[in-house]
Length: 396
Image 1 (cartoon, helix red, strand yellow):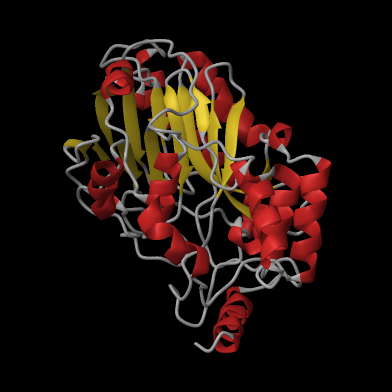
Image 2 (image 1 turned 180 degrees about the vertical axis):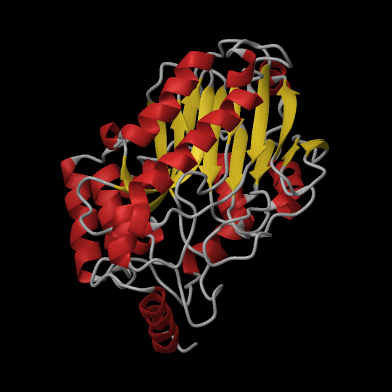
């Protein structure tokens, strides 16, 4: 997986692992806790006085399109044909977004070449309350045939393509990761970014069973390092971050502080468009909110599937609305981002850490990390019971 080259060194890894394995990181003597915190923080690339890591841009401005496409769950009983049908549809809407549909002979007869194409959270597999056995069947490997097909389109069009999926990951048997994937113009995977966490209590007595960073935090850090907890893809069209986490402004702010310039916010089953403009304004970056369209034929759901008018939007660093879909059908929102000028003139977010550090260092959430490091929940009901038991244990 991309990011292994950022693993922490052996001494730091052993130090964090020993504390995490014993569940004592929050109960160690102050000197020991400070030692662990120092080891963790020293591996993270964060902006210093407004300067952050980047690579040279290939061009001054980029064309960006967010595709509001359908969500249609694959049928586990007929997996290969339904997965192929979804993948074929994704490849088709990418061609349409590039103005090169098959019906026109693959030649661009309308619009401009797009440098970044963004799809929603589950355009290839869809979403169902699958149990773990079925979810593992639905998930695919990265790289694999599906990512290679999308990568071939990225190479054909010389663009970046961002999409979400359920993925199997080497070293994590039986886990299925809610993953964001960015393909590059060479056809390869530029970055894979795990979902940071699930929103707890969102589904009543049920909860999601896809693995997130928070669910396995200690082991994740051992394997990939703290810089990969909130990853940034530093590309020649800008610093890209991608997340399927909604209603988490502190997460978005931390990604900005790590140097994100374009934040891709994906969702399936309900638009995140309402928060896109405020996220862009507060963090002074470009924000792309990608929702799904209405989706006839989606197993177990009415065709609305959370799609709505203006469900997909692109906002500028002052919070202004640069593009939006004005309907709930399959559609695109497109704009041009002057990324070079943005870099030269960006007023970087100023966070007065001296005011906040004492609170953040001492705050304890009701639901802690690492709850999937033991037994994995098999169903949504099992996951809901796990959430409930942890909250009760925390006095909730």
